[in-house]
Amino acid sequence: MRFLRDCADAVIDLLLPSVCPACLVADGPGLCSACAALIVRNPHPCPWCAAPRADVAAACRQCGGRGIVHIGTATVACAYHGVIERLVTAAKASGRPSAVRALVS
Image (cartoon, rainbow, N blue to C red; front, side, top):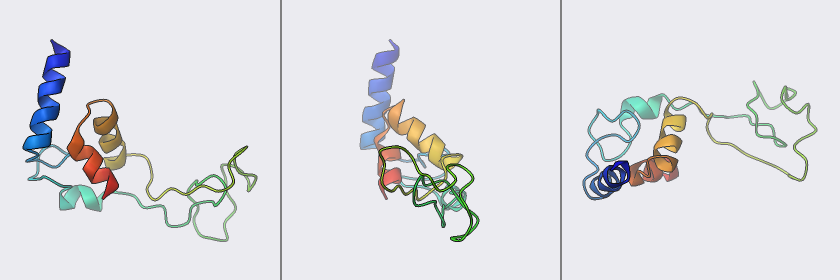
């Protein structure tokens, strides 16, 4: 029964995305301005592991400048918590197309 409900929710979300995919309260179909303002940007990622740093000259506390094995460089535009975490969860676990659209825009 849950499968059918999830499928129906995905179809409705695809056809009638009327709310913000992050908070599910504000008018949609895209991200509302309140949720967009809560996204934490990563302006100075470590070039080796993409962990956030205070500034470009700061040493990385995650990898110490050694990076990740078998990965040349990495980048991350936003921190994975709050709005971004809810959108990724909605996209992956709930199959919500509006959450996928919000993540790629």
